Length: 270
Ligand code: ATR
Image: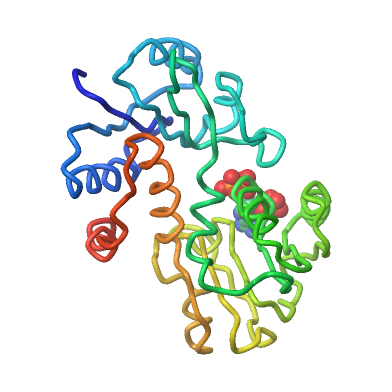
């Protein structure tokens, strides 16, 4: 590799959409840099970071399954991501080969919500896994009101709410969705090959927003049900593109050209 580059690492890695997104923006802006997908197994992770640290062309990497937690051991954690989210999805090579970890999922999740007034409003979150942590971190930043967390494992949901110091309650997944200004699915339910998420949305007010982080299929049964009720919806490509945009700016020092989203979305779906 001769010029500047960044990459996404994971095991497996071939499914990652990150190269499509990052290369689309590099081309759109005429930036002479590369972005690639690199297969890194858990055993190879320490050697990977040790090697990249000394490569001045390497701007950093995105991190996907299964390295999001293990990678924390190799980076500086300037933002307290370890305590707040417990996982990173981006590593930047700072001056003198210092590796700095961050998690752009939270900012990527929050970006499409900027047009909605959610401060102090009740919110419902489905799920209590890694994605839920990034979502709750973002919701804490927005200053939402009480959070109802629906999860198959209720105790896990309650522990997660209290770890974020959020007001609210954990209920089973088959519990009714309470009136909420925002409903978010953070689980893989509804993804192709997974059971669907069939919730009764009748208690949601007319101005509610329904947000699904699943993007395959783009219209999940949850979003279809929300649209049938005339509610505002945000699909999973918004978060996928949003987290990538934050990483792109960190890697390449330029704002992602979000005015080209329609074209990017067509490429991602194609
Ligand atoms: P991620 O890092 O993508 O969030 P995860 O940490 O494995 O993945 O979390 C998956 C979430 O989806 C959890 O909330 C999980 O519920 P439990 O905490 O009860 O395990 C939820 N989930 C996954 N498959 C599910 C299923 N078939 N039914 C109900 N909930 C499910």
